[in-house]
Length: 346
Image (cartoon, rainbow, N blue to C red; front, top):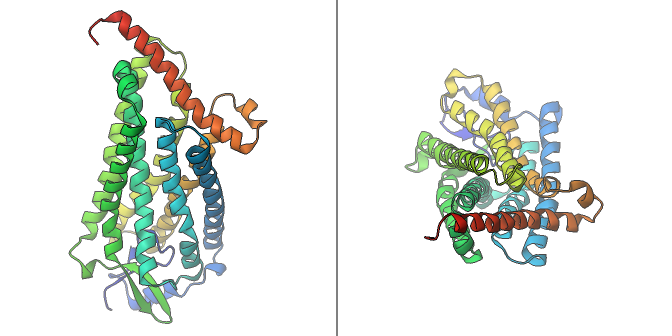
């Protein structure tokens, strides 16, 4: 059998390697109809819901934070996250069609582009969460310095750098994507044989850069924040960090299963093809869900939810986002006052 990689469940997520299986096994998987499989239909429906909620929710956040609110460091963070999620959600229909038909009718360019967008969303989201965590940590540990240097311009530069690095790390996913005619279907798959890029190298680099290192940095930042708040006794509540904590936890819950199955797939001959295919399909959908959960967290994780619930949707989002900025500003002001009393050498 000719060696190739084929994806029968999602044109955007990492493919299962069929090069060690017989031609009959490959044909059997590619010829299955999604509409005859309850689990596949369920995943397709879930992705349709993710698309609808993701596009509408992130679109509203972009409109509110980008056009209706005064520019601030916090709105810069939220706007960038919403843009990343919105772009990803707009590409979901291509993958939904691919899941439903087990074929890719959209050509080589879209095959490469949709894969690139997925990893761009993954890297940009986690890098922005790292930046926000470091920003929160610096605001707590060095409040006076943060008061003087925490500016919209500086935030914009950091966001731009995060996007540039994300683009660079996402390029290999576009380079390795290719299309192949398999029977009467065109397949969007990973073709590592046409470029000098190792499947193992790409998978481990995504895990290390897109998950492991960010996880360590974010965990360290929030550990420092908790210890600082407890030692200073300046607040009895973690409400200023509730929204961002929820965003971070949600990101890792959504993305960890995906990375686990991608790493398992590297040693695919030791695992069941059905388990890996199902695991990658479900974990890929769970990763997609992160893009529509963020706007919900903006609204429902803010303080005084009951009062905001009575307001219109736009007002709730604006208040929830602005609330985080006001709380941080109040905390910085109080912290600055304490620091000035403690030392005259600032």
